[in-house]
Length: 340
Ligand code: NAD
Ligand code: UD1
Image 1 (cartoon, helix red, strand yellow):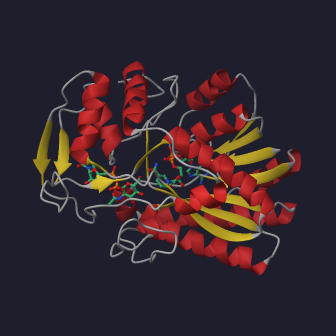
Image 2: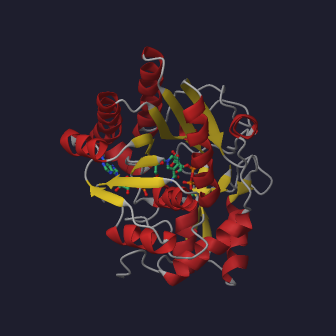
């Protein structure tokens, strides 16, 4: 079966394409390189030993997307394409609403025109309200998002739920990722943030390789065992496998269903830092600073639904993710383009 992967040159998309190609699926990738590089596509081909069609296009370009559906017999679409930087979404909200909502609407329009009805959407744990108890289950309260990025995911989920409700043979799977980290074990592909990283793992990795002076730990007075924030870090290759499991489910069920993709285990900022230090064999400087506005003390997934219904569970540990992340970062200190 051929899977159209939008945003497939990006961090999670590239790892998912490798998993798809490795499991015998054909992939067609569409990406506008707004946050990724052609080098990632070249390496995906090298690593998989397989060629695949790549289209450099914005998903909102209806003519180009129609061409893709005409040229390939697409059985399922995975929609990763989107903007994802939380701080930037606060500064330029219209760009976030325009890109993330319009791309989803345009893609569904093209799918409708071409009779393709299986869609897997990259959602996020950020759609859950901050006042839920832990672990978060798929029926925990959603909404009350604290930034425009979160609202775009919440709104896209609603658009897709309505689309699946309106046409009974549609099958939409909403995958709510917790905190993806790590890299392909080859060290050839990994996370390559364009700017100073917002997220903890790439910041630690760039500090370890000497691109940042020290890590700022955002608060050590949370009600957690060591006072620092606790999150559910999931290895990106486990996440990639979750998408393959979702394709199978998508083909066998109609409707719209949400699944958490996490490990169910919490790790604190200092625990992640120490795990990375062990993987890299070096000390990483840090300073404790103020809390970051909007941060929760603790956030982790209930994983029962994905295990029971999709038959998928995360297998790798935080130590594995740190080792793979260090392998990637130390071999590619400046990411794909390797320019300082
Ligand atoms: P990424 O930025 O590495 O990948 C997104 C890709 O989409 C990039 O290659 C970018 O060039 C492309 N893109 C963006 N807008 C596009 C458009 N209009 N047309 C074509 N291509 C476009 O991000 P990622 O970490 O791989 O995330 C993938 C998806 O998962 C995103 O939708 C993101 O919001 C979601 N997500 C990510 C995380 C995370 O922590 N990384 C967590 C939860 C959800
Ligand atoms: C953030 C986003 C969320 C997004 C997710 C994955 C916010 C408020 N939330 O979640 O919408 O879905 O990333 O992309 O930005 N930390 C530090 N120092 C740093 C960076 C982070 O101490 O330099 C801490 C944070 O306070 C937090 C933990 O590390 O306790 C993880 O942070 P991060 O990687 O940004 O992920 P989330 O906050 O879970």
